[in-house]
Each structure stands twice: as C-alpha cells, then as structure tokens.
Amino acid sequence: MTKRNQLVKSLKNISKLINSLLERNLNKLKFDNIKILASNNKIILTFVAVFVFFISYLLLPTFYKQGDISKELKDELLTKFNLDLTFNQNLVYNFFPRPHFVSKETSIIENKKNIADINRIKIYVSLDNLFSLKNFNITEVILENANFYLNTKNSNFFIKLLNNNFLNANLKVINSNIFFKNLENEVLFINRIKDLKYYYDQNELNNVFFSENEIFNIPFSLEAINNESEKKLFTKLNLDSAKLQIENIFNYNDDIKLGLSTLLFNKKKSTINYKINKNFFEFNYFDELDKKKFLYNGKINFKPFYSQFEGNTQEINFSYLFGKNAIIAELLRTGILNSTNIDFKLNINANKIQNKRNFVNLILKSKIQEGLIDIDDTQIEWKDNSVIKFTDTLIFNKDGKLFLDGKSQINIKNVKNIYKFLFTPKNFRKKIKTIDFRFSYAFDEKVVILNDIIIDGKYNRKVNKKLNNIYFRGSDMQNKILFKNMTNDLLKAYAG
Image (tube, rainbow, N blue to C red; front, side, top):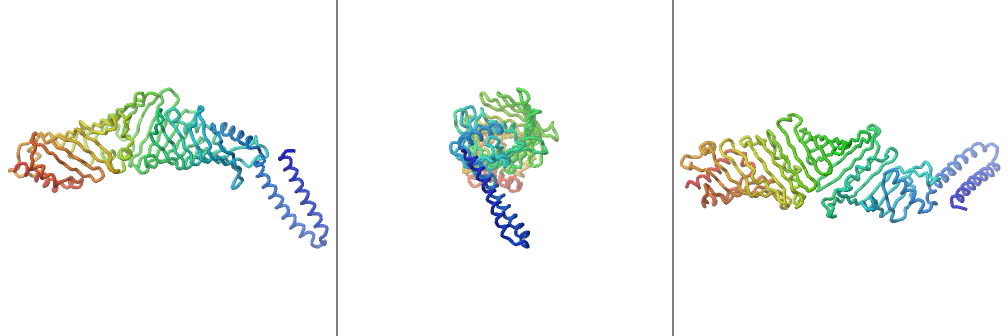
C-alpha cells in the first residue's frame, strides 16, 4: 500500500473516531443540556477536524518522491518561464507562510552551458491541487544571491524572459549580480541587481520587467514592456543621481532594428533616432525644441570596434560633460573608459559656451584610444581677440578626482583690445603674438595652475617666478577685477 493510500485511510479513521466520540458523549447528557453542549462540541470538534484535515492536505507534498518532485518542477519551470534549471541539492518543502519548495546551489543552463549559479531558490505552488504532483501550478519563483554570466551572445537573456507567461505567475531576482564578459571570458563590468521582478500588468495587458540596479556605484532602475504582437520593446531607464531619464521604443520586426529614445535631463528634453544590426549602431540626436540648433550623429562599429560622434550646437554646457555628477565624469572616475579596447572619438562644434559669453566658436575634439583620454587639437576663441589651442592633453582620475593636464597656445589677433579689456597701464603694453604654457585643471575644485610660460617663443624667468605664487580658481575667473589684477601683475613682470 502506498503512503498516499495510507494517509487517506488515516483521515477516514480520524473522521470515524470524531463521530464516535460525539455520539457517546451526547448519550450521557441530560435532555435539558443536550442542545447547548452538543452544539458547542460540534463546533469545536468540527473546527479541530477541519484544521487537522487542512494541515494534512498541506503536508501532502512531503510524501512525494524527491526525484518525481524535481522532474515535475523542472518541466513546469521550462514550460512556463523557459528556464532550464539543474537542482544540485534536494528540494525542501515548507507550507508556511504558503506552500513552497526551497533548494540551494541551483544552476541555469542555456545551450548546454551554465549561465547562472543560484545560491537559493524558492518555488511557490498553488493551493488548488496538492493531491496530484502532475497538477502542481507554480505561482512565483524567487532567485536569491545568484550570479549570472553573460556576454554578447546571451546578453538579451533577461529581455527574452518577457516572452513567457506571467499572467498567473511572477519571477523575482534578489541581491544578485550580472558578470558581463567578453568572448575571452574577461569580466568587463558587474551589474548588481538589488530587486528584479517580472509580472503581468492588467492595465497594459502585457508582461512587465522592473529592476533596481547598481553599476560602477551608480544606482539606476530599468523598466521594460514587450509587445510581442507589434514586435516592439518599450523601456524606461532612470538615473536619479544624474537627473536623467530615458524612454525608448525599439522596433525589432526587421533585420535592421529601428528605435526612438526620449531623454529628459535636468528638465530638458531631447530625442534620438537610431538603427542597429549585428554589425553597427547609428544615431541622430537632436533637441526636441529646436532641431536645427542642436544636432548630433554618430556610428559605432562592432567588428572591429570603433566609434565616432559628431555634433553641432548653438550653445554647449560643459557641466553636462564634466560636472560633479555628470555621467561622463562618473565613468571617468570608475576607470572603465581606460580600457585599451575602447576606440572612441567625439567632435563638437558650438557657437557659444553657457555662462561664458566671452568664449565663442568652440571646436571640441576628444578621443579615447589605447586607454588614454585627450582633447588634442581643441580650440576656442576669446571674443575676436585671440584663439586658444590645446595640445598634449590628458584627462585622468587620481584618488577619485578628475584632472586635465596639457599644453596650450594663445594666438593673439588684437592685443590692443586685450589691453583695453584688462585696463593694463600703457608702460606695460608690449606687443605680444603668442603665449605658450603648460596647465593643470582640477574639475572638482575648479582650480587652474599655470607654469612654463613662453611668450613669443622665449622663456621669461620673471613671469614664471611670479606664477609660482599664483593659481586661478573658478571664482577668480568670474571675479573680473581680481582676474585683471592677477593678469596685469604677470604683464608687469614681463615688461619689467
């Protein structure tokens, strides 16, 4: 006789015993008290019987064989979530607070390769039918402390899960990590998953993916909805620390996929049109308010990898690029852009610089190549009086702070106007054509240090000695009187 038949027979015996006790006790009662006591005993005994039966029902899965349970749950997970799991340890059944199975050291297999190690998995099943192992219905799966190993071949693993049935079941991932590797199995970055879940949204009538993550110490959240009938993927990325939100519509119906992204940065809106296939990524980026004054385009080639972006804008705000919490500044601090595999070029032409009305006609040329970041050949005009060019530049991170070192040359077109602007005394007004110097700039402190000044090809000892006691802060540059006095002191040393 099987364990299941034994349990059913035991439940029947319990019921018979309850009825027998009830009958014997009722026969001993006086007629006047029969109704009250009988009623009370029936309620109590009925409650006890129901409770015993319910607990026994919840305990049914403990009587099933381990191998049968493992096989049925694996089949159900594969059918419902397209997850091929391997249980390396036995499944433990618990019915509190609701029926579920727990296992440790579980793996996810894809294309016969292990792509995830799960420290702990919980599989919740419905209360509807615990009598039949084959009728188990999984209602929720929780993966805890998992490590996912992804690369370019399986990078869409989490997006593909959206194609499954989450109408009556949820999937969660908690306190886990994604190790994204290159094809040489080297870890490129680690994405920490704080809380990730898949569920069915009754309003959207679609599966929803929502995840709270952290990458390079930058927290962000990502939401995705896959409309399989229209072959469109809707995503929303939030980086609160950078005040950036990106909403994206991705059409994957054809070989060349098309997309439209809307960016909201510091309450300013812009859009990106792009197309992508396995070999390249191209985009056009423009301000939604005025497309003609703000336009960027670029291309990223995957094999071999290189990228080049170009743009024209009426006005540029450098705080977006190198501000204290700007995305580029954060990436530079992490060191990810120092990889020798990155070949990145960015060229921007801007008529004006925000909050710097005296500086015009910027030609910014920047590149990240062989682990180095420079802005060589960048130039900018100071009014109509001079052109400033940069060479031998290097942007680097030191102790979590950003610095820019390099050389600069100032070609003076109208020295008379410069002297008038500075209110330089006439006896200090020497004719000057070029000024070369080395400089160091600290982005966080907004401090500029100048040295090795060469005027018209000659090194002036007096001027450089004077420079040893001078450095410019951002506030000094804004204070016109202080800036003019400091500059005139240098001109005095040169004329002297």
